[in-house]
Every structure is written in structure tokens, then in C-alpha cells.
Length: 108
Image (cartoon, rainbow, N blue to C red):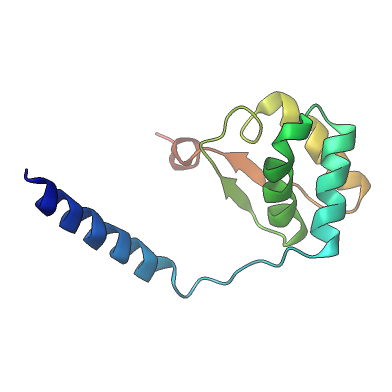
């Protein structure tokens, strides 16, 4: 394909994706989220450089999401880390959502 045609197609795809998510609610990055993210970093094996991942998980947890879908298997969809994150969440009266890849959610 010509580069111009590819650019037009990518623009159309991006516009369609934006249209799909346009009416989704945004979750607040409030103090509860930041406090939980800090606990995740202090009490789990998440490295300091995974601070954005900790906030991502904390947002989903504080706002009571059932699932957090991710392709990040190093820090988020990681069974070894999840056990400790669930314990921390429970200690602070939250329930950790199911952290998984889209493929895991879809199943067979």
C-alpha cells in the first residue's frame, strides 16, 4: 500500500477507537488511589520504577473494578506479585480485581 493510504487507514482506525471509548467514565486519581499505590510499592516486590503500574492497579482496586486487563505480564498480570497485592488490598479493606491479559479473560 502507498504510505498515504496507510496513514488514512490508521487515522480511521484511531478515530473509531476514540469513538468507542468516548462515553466511558474516567476514574479519579484521588488520595486513596495514591495511598494504595504507595503501599503496593512499599510492601510488595514491585520495583520503584513500576510506580505507574502501581497506580494503574490501585485505580482499578479503589474504584472496585472486577477486572484489569493488561499486556504487562512483568508487573501487573504476574501471579507471584498478585498474591501480595491481594493481601495488601485486603489489609486496607479493598478487593484486588482480577489482573489478567485479554487472552486469559477470553479463555478457550
